[in-house]
Image 1: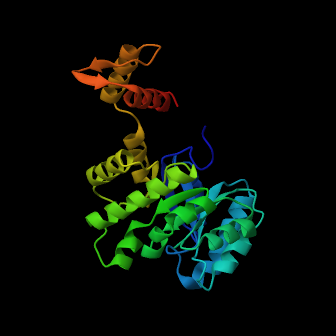
Image 2: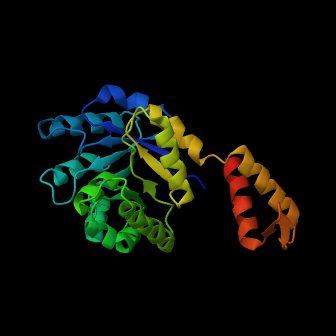
Length: 266
């Protein structure tokens, strides 16, 4: 079932001090993430809180990223969101402690997406998952914390911890981190496809033109749908073993095929 945290594959960051962009983001097909953290200069955060709260109170709906629990402005961020009718979820930056996740939820009255951006966050992924509504990967900051490049195999290896933690906690599949190459749609498409293949349920975006590319990556292709229909037809009503294209079809493949068809049906 689609929920406010699973209804889209793309989640689009918008600076909280740029209210003229909020409506555009809301109409982009992505879930907007109004940002009170990295995208806003420290001197503009008070104004950003006011812009975000006003828009949410005027029928806007969005996720809001707040500063890390240890940051000086964190308490002001969550206080500004308390009881907001349009708050879909709080995204807690640099999540490392499940107690901080629960506190953010209690302070705002909304679900919390734990943004895992550090080695400590990866180490606590299972505990964070049990305290959160969803996990998300902050791959750029994670790479910085580890002293590697964002495309290091180590980052992708550790990203799998979020997939496993989410599954064990019964959460929706986690959100993949950003692709910073704005003028390379092929790179974005490849990143999104890889995220899907490796168990992520969506991807963070930093520009509206990334939204459609990300959404397309999670839609089953014509080839995938043809394969899925053939598998289901071969298995029949009893889900028995058969072959499609010379490959054995058994229960796990039948279930995967049915999931693909259900995903395509919306």
